[in-house]
Length: 466
Ligand code: FES
Ligand SMILES: [Fe+2]
Ligand SMILES: [Fe+2]
Image (cartoon, rainbow, N blue to C red; front, side):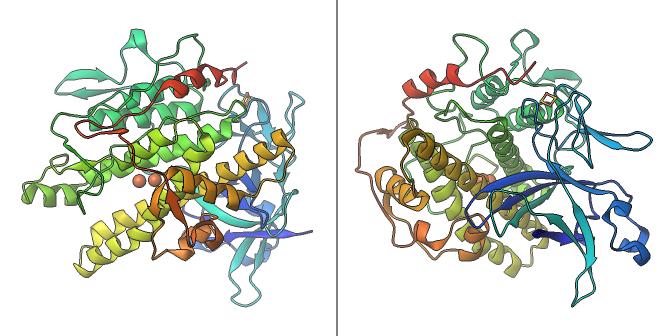
């Protein structure tokens, strides 16, 4: 039986559950959850006499999404019965046995045999799992603890400021679906409230308070043509500033595909949560804020550009283009640049900022991975719909040629790009040929043509509920 090396045993002692993403050599993705139910031993060492028996460690791997209607299982409750342990889905409370995957409802999820074995050379205990079907040479591309400090404990529904409660949304108009929350967040100019609303919405989605994704009404709320921002934030043309730029982006709304599964929304709500965390730590992190304040440049007072929004507007009619340009060009470029920034802070002896930026960089690798995962998925859909062979590398290069202006510039962070699924043939010797247009309003920044987004909104399914 083919196996996949997940991690050393030591590598999973910090948390009791992890999101585990695998990628095959064919570029297929598989999302899983790893549960470690046995308590971490004191000193980090399990007794060695039972080292071959993973069940003694109570380590289980199961599908990341519920087979009922696709909820993410990362926040499932774990309940123990006399002879079994079950994960209870946060959406409709179906329970699934962690060993067999069976549910009393008759549904079944896939579970995978786990083994703990000492590494033949180092002797260090390692966790291996049975390889999934449908691909070969699976490797781990992400092993992420679920209960990150930022997301846990749950954010409250409202926040008290100076004694006055400030709700995240007016009760009468409180969004009921994930996409309604996303529109509200995009329409929120205040960065602090934007971050808080994002934290609340993603947590509510993960824990089952929100169980609907798309739209339930004929005329759903639409995202803004351009996100409102506080008046102190100045827009300048892309390319006119060399540094100090800040993205005001937690949610990027985009073109849809009618068959998008809930796992897509889980991935991109995680991206939104990360981006809100980045905004939070960069804008409000005590050390960086203190430094900005000492330079008399509080957050938001430096000019910003909106090249990301410009790209969002150029790709508003095609999800394939959106994934290619935003995640596999813009965000992949971040992977090239971040290590140099981190190095500058390291040289300045600023360890606290280095730590913060390293967390951000690791998150960004997962954002490019999410872009690659769903770009590959879209290519597969295209292949099914058209009955033609679709080559993802050719598709990507074609998207860049149409929707990007100028060279895709190196030097490249080949290693981290590769981790995210971007092998060299995707991006080497690549040039965008998009012509210059008047689409960018020099006063107000790029403006999204919302026509196609508005038309696509009602198509997104809401019926991920009973
Ligand atoms: S029980 Fe999991 S989605 Fe319904
Ligand atoms: Fe970010
Ligand atoms: Fe990102």
